[in-house]
Image: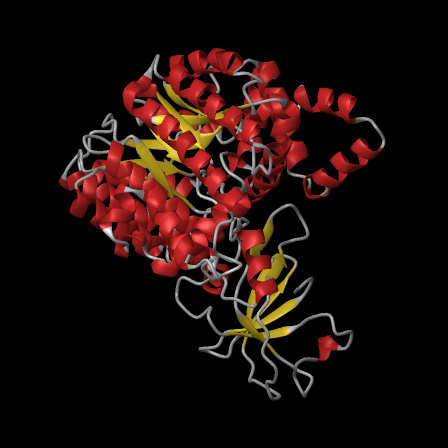
Length: 555
């Protein structure tokens, strides 16, 4: 962990970069001392001791210096590191050097694509309309003030970082009910549409009138419950499909597989399919036509393995899992309602990709109904996307692709360290930006060549990626009303981006989560963490615009 004053050595130029109190200065100096010991670790650069945190996991060589480099190191108040993997022009280091006065340099926000670094190959001057009177024309002053207060609270590290600890403490004290009441009328109200599917319909109608579509989301996180609990989740997902069917051109549903089966069973399925191929496009065609039989056969072949083979109870659970998926995806096809399959941790993801492709082959023959999610912070993200598109052409189905940066950075990094395995995530945030924007260009170019070839959900809160998307849509002369192209953002966040997309006549959808307060709490905690990063990395833009409009109305 590097804190306070930090000196960084650029590998290529041996130039010191002194980072201290928002000042970035090149210091010409020669390397002194010998390097020894190599250790891979995550580093956090705390920028200006404020909420604008610069966070990214990077592979570097930590070093011990035999000689004192500078006289101001008497108190050992800085570390010296030599960059190994961070050596490209697009690196985080170069971003700091090239834009020293920026307060939006780096952020590792996972599912919320909110960083403000531009990709060099996709410079974009398409500025958003910042007229707040137009941005928030549909919001009352009290709504603006409420949103401002909630987002401001979420930006405080102490609250967001300790939210789970607060919940545990109140539960121990027997105060869960009053806490849930408070949460229901504060954070829940900001980020969720209600506790039941019927309550979401009010928000759906309101958003539709504003030109915004909805992604109905039964917002429960990973479950480890009974068959009845998983069946209940499946039925709630089916309810979202039936509601969405009333307005299928402006509605999506979504599903998370760990809400339909015990996570340990899904992980075993992942191990089984990975033992054949980690690239699902290399799997035999029969594995897609009869995926259940494929897993059963692979389990028999590995019956001597304690980690991959399925127990009798696992097999029972897996069969029930397939029944739930069959029910959900068949209903989507019958109702012509597209559905987004959420991405999860890498140790589930090969199985998720395999299942998504299997059901896409079955139901995406004429149009994309099922959208698989591609996490572009993964080192293999772009390759997987291209492989799946090639598979769709080979097997004759329309690929549905939702692209995100990624939501499991912390758990993935901790797991790789614990198991001493390679971290699947790209080394820098700039690499992730490049990967995401490359995927965006790749997908829109496919639409340019054939408007019906693929379905795209551009799920992002990143202003530059959104600008790039709208720019490429114009550049490639793509009809923005094409039902196969849409932007996706979270309910309660980034409204200034959503309303601007509406003003540009783009198809924009908001995730509209719902569920009982107690069950949705893990979702809300994740939103708080993501929103903290969203605010910091965008220079508090959302708060700035809200405050500006409130002042305009009151004064």
